[in-house]
Figure 1 (cartoon, one colour):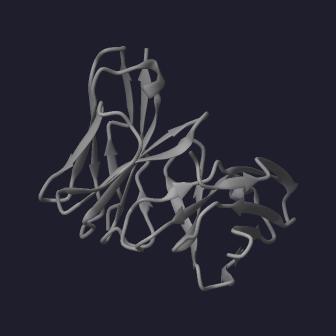
Figure 2 (figure 1 turned 90 degrees about the vertical axis):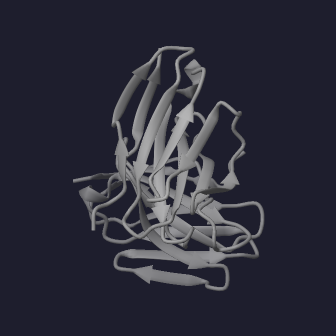
Length: 112
Length: 113
């Protein structure tokens, strides 16, 4: 089985722009979660989608949004980028929000 | 804010030695998991221990859980240079049916050949 695939691997944007990140979960997995990782704040939960519905949401501003498609693929969008949004964004999938998560390699976003 | 606190933040040992990392959390949990991350990459699940379990083994890994002290430890025995990575504990609260985990800040382990 193919693992969790995140694209792109690296991204450079400037302040004020918006960005869309993509995540393809493991086949058969219906839950997709997103995490932000920074040196200062560590790993922070963004949101979780299950069967195209947002099931959990972390404490991030409304500039961060996501969606999930019928094939379980997920995207997250960050609008009006700020310097502090520079981070490694990790996507994880599981069968049903099940017990262990399978992570992708992440998208490294740099905001200049 | 982060749920878990990990100790130590960094650990450097020689190959063949054991490495112990500790994790503390604040509120009751459904389960606690340990993940490993190689530099700048995704996390890999190592082991899960449920709130009603006290100890679990997987290969060279041993995890303990003390719910009365709200703490867990991960022991890696006979370490290898390839074990060099960051290790994170993560807790799940409430229902087990959720992809939301609360991660600790992690322990960076360096194993010298």
